[in-house]
Amino acid sequence: MNQLIDWIDKSLADISASKLFSFFFSKEKLRKEFEDIDVFYLLNETKGIDVIFSDKLFITAIHLYSGRYLEMNKFEGNLPSKIDFSFSRIKVRQLLGLPDITSGDHMISTLGHNHYWDKYLYDTYSIHLQYDKTQKYIELLTIESLSFGDDDLPE
Image (cartoon, rainbow, N blue to C red; front, top):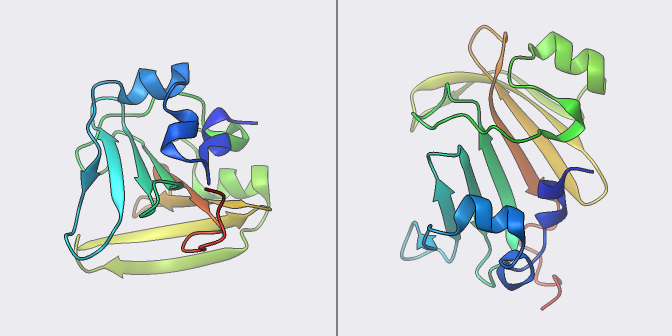
């Protein structure tokens, strides 16, 4: 299993001492995007990864960037399920099957960009794949907790 998937629903304290976490975030500072929402994140633009935390500092999502989206560098580590950013939507579906949730052409108004996406649900997490307008490559891969927002996460 991909080590990043193992981070989902873990606390910052649980993973902060790991070599992989140190590799990505040893010099990054925990940030808070909005004052009225208790969501925190770590961002490493150089290595093409960010991690989103709940208000209790449990990891709820990990974004891995292809280097072709939001001026972020490419994430160079292994992607889950033997996926590669170069895969088209068709190739991903040949590998993983039909997605559990999908979207055709969806406008994200804040970014003004059309995206196609597929989401695959697993026991405790999902893999969300966002494709470019032509559906010929993956722009962004997100690993998300299925427990996001639950107050039942371990403390």
